[in-house]
Image 1 (cartoon, rainbow, N blue to C red):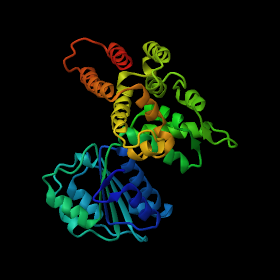
Image 2 (image 1 turned 90 degrees about the horizontal axis):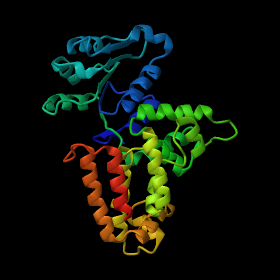
Image 3 (image 1 turned 30 degrees about the horizontal axis):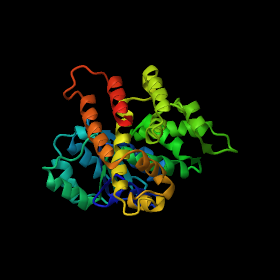
Image 4 (image 1 turned 120 degrees about the vertical axis):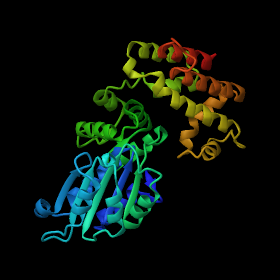
Length: 342
């Protein structure tokens, strides 16, 4: 979860929903989703609709300077408990001296929200960082890791009382990736398609609404590799050749690397014959999640796993153009799969 010094998105939202507003929110980072969620919530809930005309100000960093923002923040609310000043595109503000001065004595009746996307406060401005932290909330919204996407999807849907199976979760994660804005938009689209009497997302629903084949995808490819099902692996690779958008080396390389890295660890589990022990050893969420590793240990020796991990690193480098003048991604994918299975 995105955070700075134990300040998390969840902790901020919990306080906001309880009506607790800080004088300053400095929201920064590479993941715009959480920044927008916090700023939008404050814009919609900090003031009653009839109070917004006189007490809510939206500014853009490309149009104003730090002095103008500080002056706006020092105004007193009109016939309301507080005023709200939201600064978007704050990364465009060059000189922050006036803002730093304001942070040292912020007006308690102002909620100043600064949205600094695609970056964060210059690390050399330590006094500015300290002033922000003393004035209110400093929050860094970091990009979500690929491996955390399934948990995010499940949590997002659970809050909306919708069930989803593991395969469908992985299909969506692989197809959309870690752009949370796009991901939640696609999930909302799927939610609208569900009938009221069946609030469950299945692989068929994912195929119909997002366009990801339930039979030919990265999830199925990994399963076929784990079980060494050469026929199915070739079917999926051929499908990817004809449908490049369905899957590519860039989408399944991280997934395979994560799997074989964990498989190496599983081989060294003291009780590797026990599915429950392997799940605990790998810190998986349930014994069921260790099933693929039990299969993998039967099909791939520790030496072979070590060689595969080395090959994955090499292919990853080549896919990024290192020591690879002209081999296309499709051929690199076939080269990797052949090496793994033989």
